[in-house]
Image (cartoon, rainbow, N blue to C red):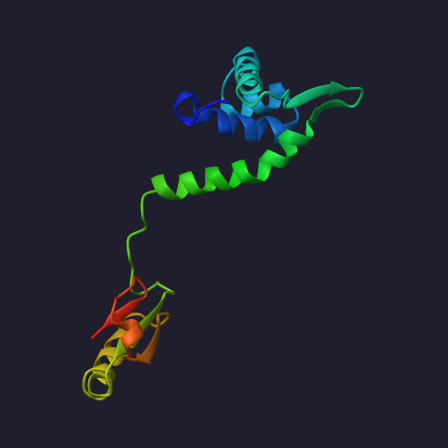
Length: 148
């Protein structure tokens, strides 16, 4: 069994392309590498996964059952990696469509929130503000709860 520290994670992108394209040449083209280089990548994948990944048939290359089963988890993993490395979008109040939950006491809700919501609505018309009563459950703030 291959350990993660011995596995080149770049192989997962190649795996995805190979299984989706069912062609070493087309996968190589999409990855901007030569066909021989992609053949070498396929060989590495076969060794690491102990599976042929793609097999030749009379209708062309076909993914093995294991390769088909691994495709969705690999796609999910690649999407997760993209989210991690993607540059975060800068917050723009005018175009944001976020939903904020504010947990607060009745006093703050009556005295501060009317002016606050007026300012937010003027600058951020698509932001939703939801007010929740302050309770013991909400004493530990989360990313979605603002304690005032």
